Amino acid sequence: MNLVVFDDNCWRNFLPLTFTRPVGDLRLGILKLRQRLSAYLDFETSGVLVIPELTALYRERHPQWLINQTANSETLFVNSRLIIDDGLVERIHQLPSGNSLWQGADLLAAVFTPQAGEFTYRQLSEKAGLLQREEAEQVQLWQNIWEMISRNAEYIEKDFQDFFYDKDNFFETEIGITVLNPYNIWLGEGVEIKPGVVIDASAGPVVVDEGTLILPNTVIIGPAYIGKNTILKAGARILAGTSIGPVCKIGGELESSIIQGYSNKQHDGYLGHSYLGEWVNIGAGTSNSDLKNNYRSVRSYYYPRGEIVDTGQQFLGTICGDHVKLGINTAINTGSVIGTGCNLFGGSLISGFIPSLHWGSGQQLEAYDVERFLAAVRIVKDRRGLELSVVESSLYQLLPEMEQKLFDAAGP
Image 1 (cartoon, one colour):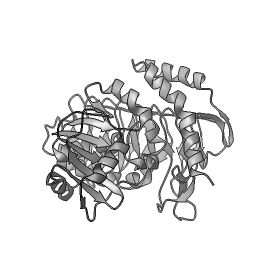
Image 2 (spheres, rainbow, N blue to C red; image 1 turned 180 degrees about the vertical axis):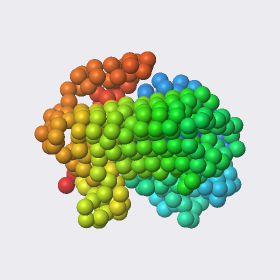
Image 3 (tube, rainbow, N blue to C red; image 1 turned 60 degrees about the vertical axis):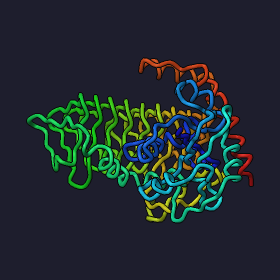
């Protein structure tokens, strides 16, 4: 049976991160949502249904997958937003061919044999509506980014127990390294740890993935995940609830934050209760607020409604799309949302919502010329030995139009 993970219309809830990736590729805990679904359901992902704008990019990145396509064979379709657990796995595995599983208006899963060819979420929804319908009870779906930030520590612990506890461990430390609760620590092959490092897994697991370098006097407090081939700079403080994706350079203080990958925060400064995309660069001394002075719940911009909403979260920092650049000593206000490709600098407070592809200081912003932005992206990717493809470049050129459509749809 094939497994196809689909994004429904709620992909907008996770913007700006989902301008450049499907919901299933968002990191939570140690794994991405799609990886966790595949592991729990014991299937290899064979395809994804994504928004049309991502089709060409994902066909380029995953030529072996069916991207917005189906094969003429029995297929299990699963919603990328599922908060998967053992009970839901059993319910999905028991779903007969020709049946669909719903929670109200939300399609959770469906099993049937489609015709081979192009296929979209709209077609899936229409087809699933004609199948034998089953109702699920007490099933949850991820609703927004800030909900994922608040539960990240919980999912680091779950992923450690489910996928790393019994996995081959290359745990070995040298004299001068302090380790608390070593049975709660997993080190991948090729991890290098310098003297003076403290890894404290007393309150939760610490997973340091393959090829990571931890420089002297770094402190890591679990639950925490450090992705493959990442460098933790000397004196870094990685506090509980933090997940750092692959190929990052990290310094300063991080707490309860998620970094998708390929991003740099090399210098002193605080990042707390935040979510960063890929290719983000944070300058020296830049910090964000994650708690209001009056301790009330944080308000933040929400794309589907086109306005600032109450998140219900007491702690919430910043949400940054891909390729955001923040200059030295930039101050970011509580709950700020920064769209894809922004370049922000200066002494003025960054606050509220910054639309994609803007640059400037504080609220003195201008539209960022797309060609200048793409030139910077080429340089950044070349530094990692990668190239900006024509397909990826075309997606970035679509960004202003994509975002404007969302603004128009939200409307007054």
